Image (cartoon, rainbow, N blue to C red):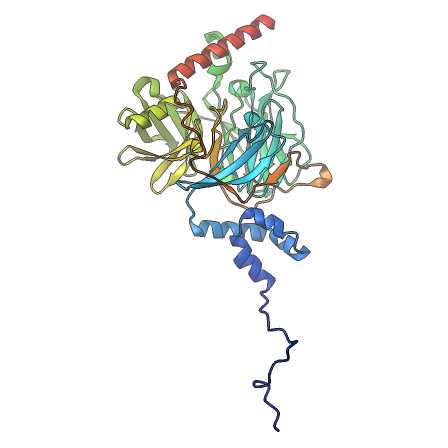
Length: 461
């Protein structure tokens, strides 16, 4: 009997079917670049080759390219205190019905956290603890973080308050290829100082090449600077000397040439930025809008409006938000929040974040406003923060903090990656802020509190 050909020959019972094995580079490039960032951390434990691939600069760039090509809706990150003494960070896409837990920090109090800026710097976020005088650089997507070395204490004008004569921000130095934390402050000997810490180079805090200008830190209250990556990177501080001094004589003595101070990462030199003369005397806060410096000018007490100014060639009015023409619910919402900052643009609209943990989409064409995010719709929201906002833009990324364990640069936070479960809309209670004071009442309370604190300080000095 003729033997069957190989094609016709029956397969033995013990022979396994052929399995298609994908090359590692295909798995990494085509599959893992589309996985959640937190999962890529777990996949690093598969083998040494995967760990090397998933921690390489090439994978970080490929992961980011896939995210940008997918054109996901903007994500908002927010944090709340799940238990006393801890902080949970969540993220949610605009107008989505779910929020996912990113990380929970077991030894970080939510009321003692300041997010440095309204968006990550190349995937990393700087967390500041004013009462502990501690800084941590984190990737909120993966939980990787590093706690910076202790720094010199800053002078605190209000002894028991959160406001200190210091400000720190996270930026990137393209020449050195590393993230840097820059800290401007006045020390206890009343000297103006500015120090830099490099996440890759380490070596502790080092002074900038050029000393800061006289009285530069006098107008700082703990708010972080704005970092823009153009032209080698530049930090911008709002120097508000009118906040920290009582009386026209002190304000005149400690006055600065302009209300905005800049620091070039490339040259290490300081400079001054002039505000529009007609708006220099109004309350404003600095932010970023579409890669440009943006001043959010609060004119609610005068003409019921916000103004956003950007310095393209010179300062120009980007848009004017007329609160008087908004529907009553929207007008009241803006009237009761203490701070409003631009977060970015999306679909031709400007996203505005408020200190009441909400995000509004503003349409410059028709002065229309639509609420697109609120922490209160997910869970009970805390009260307004003393400094800046408790929300920011989120960037899903696998960027590394470049920790250097041999130099002692390790994380001190008890980070735990989030669960797979999510918080659904409707968990939060009814709007618990409805009876909170208006912005005018809040400003009166703040001025009275600051005046009393300064009086106590002058009496005890």
